[in-house]
Image (tube, rainbow, N blue to C red; front, top):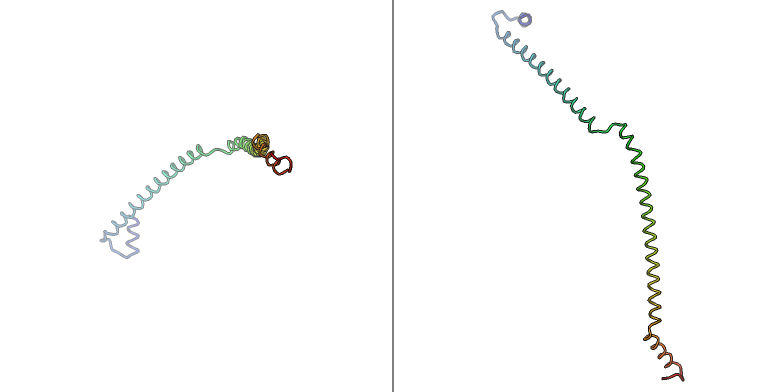
Length: 136
């Protein structure tokens, strides 16, 4: 009501104007409703923020747990590197042995060809034909 009197005197309106009272009342109610809603939204946001923070702290590992995992990770990483080196050396060794086996197969094959009787006779026959006086 005090505001109503001040508004009437500010705008120089007489006491017979009731619409200023109605407008003032409506604006007061709207401001009160907005104030209550903003308080409710602030509390709701605070509750949601707290819930999300708790959920994040449960899901994300703490610094201490990360530091406790780090030495194990370093050990596993070093072991995997050593395993990689071992596998590379084993592959090289296998390749070298495979080449040696191929070389041995080739030598055995040559020896078998030299030891075949048909080849020996054909070589002897050719040699006897080419040498005068040894003809068959």
